[in-house]
Length: 269
Image (cartoon, rainbow, N blue to C red; front, side, top):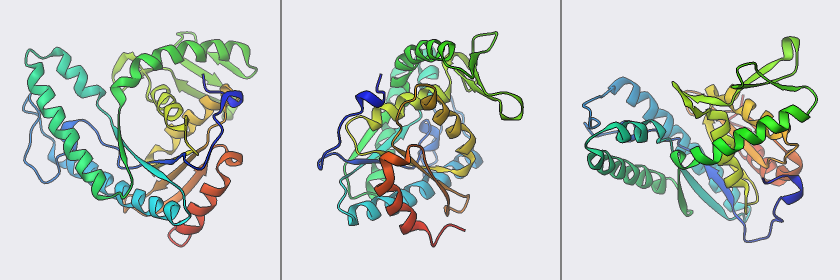
């Protein structure tokens, strides 16, 4: 576990990792193409909205990247591919190879779109690869909750509960979308953040403001471990305008956070 005692010391060669333009399974990364998935499913309206959010995120991510580069930070762009659903469908199919061809094409499209919005190296991260580490993390979370005041595990063992009364917060440990056998989005995100944090000067994530509640729950998981989280989250509205900047462990991201806030302050109401 990467805790406060084991945080890697930063050096001048370590990058700030910037993730923006959250890509979903293949049917949502093919804007401009009349493409259906291998089962013939297509939701053009949903795909259009998601692609608008992707483009907004990529554009704002480029703005953040440029701000950091102007202040002499090395930057690594992260392309996050939310591919768990499509991997599940692929595992059920007798034509697994067709799914793989479609996934490969979608990933190349996503990489091309991300590279167009970046002058920095781009690294692909696939959420399906976080599932097993997230299952291990669930056991760590349960042990930590049993030992920390103010935290407890729900009767069914699927949620963490912190606080009481109006301040009570419930955090799912399992239940990715409709898949009860999989770790929750919050646990998967913690795995992703730990990976991005390691060997970096911190990480910046650009997301629609609708993710605020979910991201706050991820932040609480780091607090359960008393674990430093050098994370800056930049939220944008449905027009792509920045509306809020949240620093999870400001003592570790003071310089990065200040640069982003100063650079975007005229855009934030």
